[in-house]
Image 1 (spheres, rainbow, N blue to C red):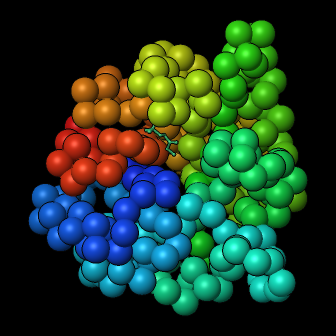
Image 2: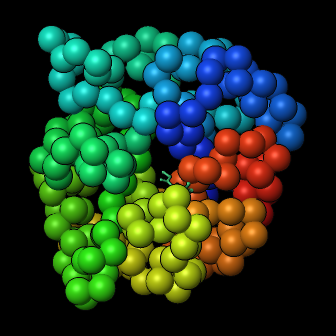
Length: 250
Ligand code: 13P
């Protein structure tokens, strides 16, 4: 069974509710009827009550950029999985490199968040990727294996079906320096081999691995031509309806 591609927009800390509404008003007609790929938007939590209802009944899913692993509690500034579900979010990013870099998220925290998302039926997109020094030191494979093992600890093959992985080499994020399709595909193959070891060949063959890092309208086609690349997680180029549409319709 071929894997259905997922093209996802990570808006990071951009847009007001009015700007988000303007985006969705323009974007939905542009991708109406597009069923070849799944499409998802990941806005900031304060935008969810605008973006979720605006996308209801469309072919565009909406999720969070982050959730806390606890179901509720005294965690100032955090968003729970129940809060996400209550406003209609169906997906969540987990362990984005900016969360790891600036908010000290470890593989152990990523693992706890993954279990929370799976328990509550929210589609998790687990982000992994090496930093430049690791790539230059020849450590990419070992870093990716460690991240996969850490993230997936205690996940059974039966529970793993909803999981999506996003491979985002940190040196390619926001730098305009995209991984070549071959570099990305090689990393995806390493990740899939590790998932095979952990969860079996069937789960690994069905799991979608997205590429993220300076994806643009002019490089998406070559990236998606790689059999190992099952979609994209797009930052900067997802902020405008026209450029994100061009990526969705590569
Ligand atoms: P850019 O597309 O801006 O490089 O961001 C990638 C990213 O971090 C998506 O999660």
